[in-house]
Length: 264
Image (cartoon, rainbow, N blue to C red; front, side, top):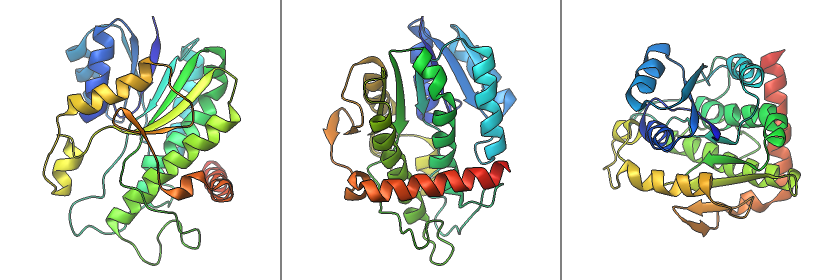
């Protein structure tokens, strides 16, 4: 029985994945920030499930969740960094996390970055193991002169930067863990799936959640090359910044600095 941790598992793609994996006999760790919603999902999907709670907009809660997972579980075979927020409703402005970090960068990227790094020792003890980062085809290069968009904010730019950051981290961590038995991949699961995030953004729904679920399950289940980005089930090319080692190093330094500041 595999143990699979899915962040953002109370709605959308995460909820879909949790149900399918539990029905196949995997032990699913359902993450959410609301205890009642997590409880309802576990009751609905049945199977062998556990729960962890954390608001990913608060790095102290992310850190606490990582410690809890390390203490409660002797292995994690797959970490799916799925939780995220969209660009927001049309006309919405810049928001910050509890740590004062631009909200999309904090939730979509930095929380998963910190969680994956904290759980890497546990994943290494669980080999062969996998990290799957649910990113997006919507990507935009990070402006390191203003990475948190304090001067010129655009909701789609904030979302797209955060998703490219996920892919940059995927490439980076895959290089670090090469040959260690932990693969790291990222994907755009499907375009405008029927999820709360898409409906709130005001764009038309184009694909069922199952399509994105199929693509994500492929990376959870199959041996594919580490460090790669996939559009659906096909390997694809991400924004060129993802393959710029200097840019990835700057992102890593920024991320570590922000985490240190938040955790004190």
